[in-house]
Image (cartoon, rainbow, N blue to C red; front, side, top):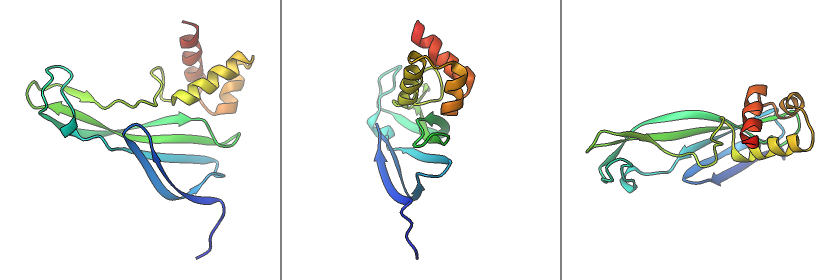
Length: 147
C-alpha cells in the first residue's frame, strides 16, 4: 500500500459532535467532513416540562458551508443531529448545532469571513465567487450584520 502525503487521518470533537476518518485529501476541490452527535438523551431535560424522560426520536441531517482550505475549493460539514421527544408532555425538540450560524446553513467562522470580506470592500458578487457560497446567503448575512 502506498502512502500519499496529501491524505491524512483526523478526529475532531466540536461541542458534542465528532468527526473522524481517514484519507482526507485537503487538496481535493470539495472537502466534506461528517459530524455525528455524541449527545445522549439520558442526559437531557425537556425544555417544556423539565422532566428527564427524554428519548431519541430520530436523527436528521444538514449540510453547512464552511471556510475552504484553498481558494476555489469548497468545504462542507455534513452534520447529523438528534431530535428528541419528551415521554411526559410529548414535546419534540432538536439538538443545537452550536457552530451553525442562525441566519443560514453556514458555520459561524464562514459568516465571520464573509463579514470581513464585505468590510474590506468586496462586493456580494465577488464574495460569492470567492467563497462558493450563494449570493442570497451572503446578502442575508450582510443584512444581519447591519441590524
